[in-house]
Length: 314
Image (cartoon, rainbow, N blue to C red; front, side, top):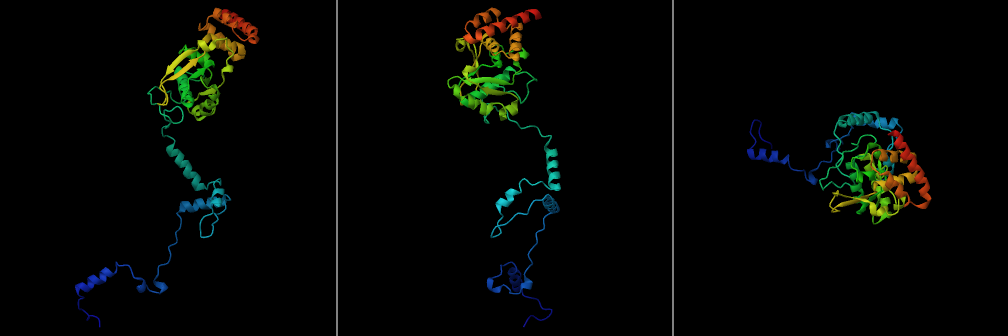
């Protein structure tokens, strides 16, 4: 018999009843009436997700297939990666780009392979050169990066070799974006330089100039040019090397190699070097006798033509 109407329930019974509400029901006390169970919650995607899904379906993307057990079929998911985004997704991406467009570039002051410039030497900023000119600091940057790749001394035989002796060489001599070079002790590793910091590499895309790995036979220069190279010593990029050593083709040997090549840009290079007083005409004439025999007469003819043109220009 329950308590009489109006009578109070003892406090201990109230506490026991209240505590029982927070205890998990035992398996034996669970009711069998299905009407007491809560209906499963239907998870409806937010409006933006529904719109995006509808956009994908309108674009022709097939719904993802499932495997036994309800697991998603990864092959079906991968096939939808290239599907056109729905309208909501497109607007979201555009908004994301607008929000982040004004952020400053986070390009680190690195030269190659993510190695910080631990030596503290100044590294030129990305694409900071003037149009059509490579500065001395950028020239050094390429050399130091190449030395980091092959861990060897570097020999420079291209147009930019003039910067080895003349850091402030005239701009017309510095129009090339590439630095022709090869490792001194293992020239066959020049291909590694090309792959790491050559034309089209991330290095090139970041800085706007690059290295061109070549062989020693590229320079058609007077005999003994290896003994006349101009030595440069530079700080390394990382601690892999104590010092970066580069050897640049001597200007007279460089000009004679240009004359032997005989291209229009080589004629202009020779004319500018003569007019700027970087080379002595008499030393050039003497150097022709040391050229490979098949190149002597063509080189002599081109040299005399350049000297005559320089004289007319005053």
